[in-house]
Length: 212
Image (cartoon, rainbow, N blue to C red; front, side, top):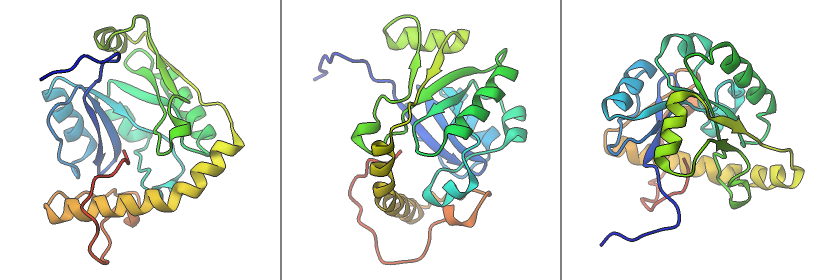
């Protein structure tokens, strides 16, 4: 039986393409990882969803922690609907600045979104998408009209230290997820670095994880 909640939930997913992570909003069906960015975005659109370039311009050394991204050539050629200009992952201040600069140069075709990318509770809501209205339908209309605004994050050294302590757990969960996907023949690897591919090792737990 359906329940009534105080918030609306937009069904979405973060897809690991071979050219960086892509957010697919309003996508009820799982999208197979490992396709190139163009095919991934096309599949998001096939489902009637909105495609967002996730954490663009994140430093390449973040890739070994699972934060894979594309590059300007990909963002220029692929039909994204929006770009994430505010991401709360630590040490992405310069990356967020570059993402905002890219969006300003391409605002006629891209909306600007913010997302916490939260792996610890204290990060939730530190980056957000501001839009006119209050419903999921209002949010979608604002993204399509490019009237949304990405906001945040503020600098908080304690939050950064908490996140840093969580990185080993985040990496372990990412490895376990990739091993589960490999067992199901759902394998993805990012061309930017070899560390995104599943690595051999002991059998991983098949329990649920909270990483995105």
